[in-house]
Length: 331
Image (cartoon, rainbow, N blue to C red; front, top):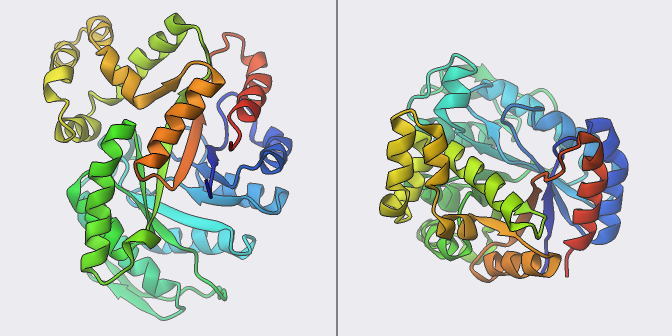
């Protein structure tokens, strides 16, 4: 297996404490560390620090939100990280969700596909050092003053057909998440077909997948965590539509109905076991590795493990993450 990644920063561990964690990850054979942008730290600062702490790990943003920062600001942030990367940085962009864009940032979540497509086109041109205008984005005459020999690859976070096709036809890779191993062929096929139609090599398209790992053999704990996560995520408009498209409308319908009625407790109880078993990696270290391997067999080229904390005491989290990282190092 060529690449093996993890999610960084890890929950419950200060950013500064990741210096040694990342160095250990590198020594264990991990090749990638991918940041995120939800309600914690932004994706660029951890990537820049991680690059300065390590020698071989590749760092990526999964994803940098195209709505909450302007196109020029996105280009500048990427340029800054790229200057310290030495070819080890990937800019992953995406639309995120209405909750993050509208509710938390007060920005309209309108035409996400168009916003991602035009931001991707803008960044490609801006990274050449030429002056860029983009009528759709409202950009007039921006030129990136900083120069770099090699522009970072750009990956697109995608769920359904249009965004998957955009990733395949115009980006260097696609970022997927919150799906089961048996869902992967459907999404990868769309991206690769778009790449082929665009005259590109479909086999060159990298497929990054964030895989949620609950590192415990206590089934009561793992299923409790999984049910709460699924009820919270899959009832949102973006992920609800995604899983209906994947064919889970009937199985997730009762949960959604309870959630819409305001009964969060019942909705959590109604999360189907087969969905939990599909989208979460759980159990012994070997069982987890076997499940991760299924993602890779089905088309994922960069598995990115997201360790979900199971310790009740926050003080135990750093050691727990290290233990899991060692147990799930690349086979």
